Length: 285
Length: 355
Image (cartoon, rainbow over all chains, first blue to last red; front, side, top):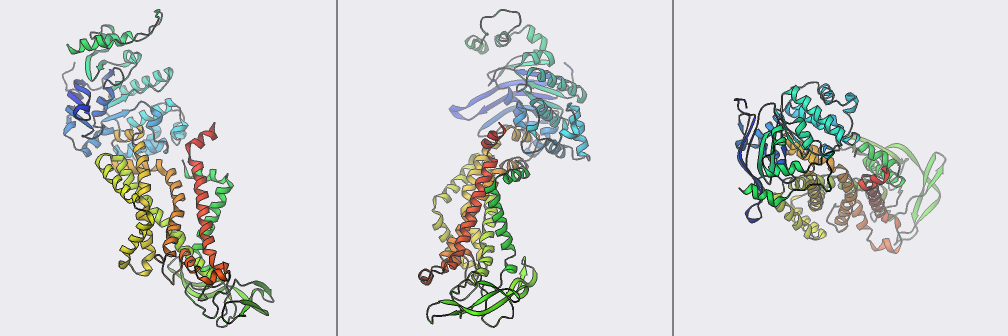
């Protein structure tokens, strides 16, 4: 690893929903970091705390009595936990941008995409004068054909892949240093998935931003991530360079997760499932 | 849904179009009431109480009207006088008024030509003191029709701010706001109306009564609206595009007004159309009970309360009930329009159409 300080450094992050006996510990004391320009994949089953971790980075979770975030989050020199809401708002979008799972619901149905991208521009890059030109440029960047005409479309007039491209364009509009992609391809079919991922990598290289990629899809992980973080029940059970983790998983959960992937050419009677008793035993140690 | 699209859909529905047409006519009439009305609302003509609607005839100089004489010394029993007519002058000068409240004018659509003292044209008869019901109906429409719009504007604004904020923030503020709303809703409307009127009345002059009534009606009306909007904002708040806006660093007020409000637009449109009749009827009820608009000003409810006169029933002076018909038509038109709009913006309906 390089000696320069990481872009994002998370130490002993605890996230708890509710309080007292009914409290749910979504994330239990995890440490990780993301370097500049790095693509880090976070994998794990549903409910393992991936999305909550991602949202906690700029405190997008409900305020205290409902949800408590403890620990240190440092993002390029800012201690996120100590920032006021107004300072945090500066950071949101401009430094850390998000792409969510469902592009069709992440766009406001009553506004044209021109409106929605311009909202992002007005908010974080008020110096941009020719907003329509900039939007056209952004849409061309994410490879939407006929951008000049399409930018006046409403979300329902676009296909799922195009909607996700618009979301990416919105995220890019603010030139973030870290792009958090929360299952960006889950709602899309396989061919579109690879197109979107290739687009993300291309843009990543162009803008030199880091990507935190939350996914279930090991195909995407092996193809695009530099490093992998495996989460299980609020803990990080394993992290390391992608090929190392995928080829030589150390933790039984990671092994089990990889075993669950149906393999071509291998005869299988039933799909493999995870034997939780075995894993929790290993995690306790 | 886009306003233009809603209007296009509306054009395909005859009932909605007719209702909208009727309402537009009524509001235009209210706007030009002073121009259309031949006499001021308060000018009495004590010689001619309960004069029946004047019959129109052709005279040598164009359209004219008959002259009536009372056949009975005690009870009104008006009969037309044979071979005596008055002619009508179009765009004639009459009483002074201010068009739109600030442009001085005295032109009226019609007046009686060289009328002597006491000669009047009563298109819809006269009331117990000989005032022209037609003129009063037109002037009264200004009060009765604007009260609905003014009331619903205040209601929707307060309802949106309270409901939207409490739905957005949730937690304690939501709890407090909603319990207060429930408290307001638990009091029967009419009693609340009457007690508010009694409590606030000393501080208002009778010419400010209009504003007082609007405020009272809105104070009662916002609770239900706030509750519904709270529920909707609660559900929209959980939609990913709000989270996306938050993740972009948008401020709370902007999210409320730029993302949540436009998504409520179609509901608000329907809610407004369907609740305006409530305000019109509320004003009519207050005025009918003598607690609303005060004489000599006119409103439809106030005019109806004058129709309680025993003579109206005994002699069947039907023209005294015209404000009732006017209320009826307005309320029906608003309800039908609201129904049609609801059909248009209802997503279930859209699914049926597109499949």
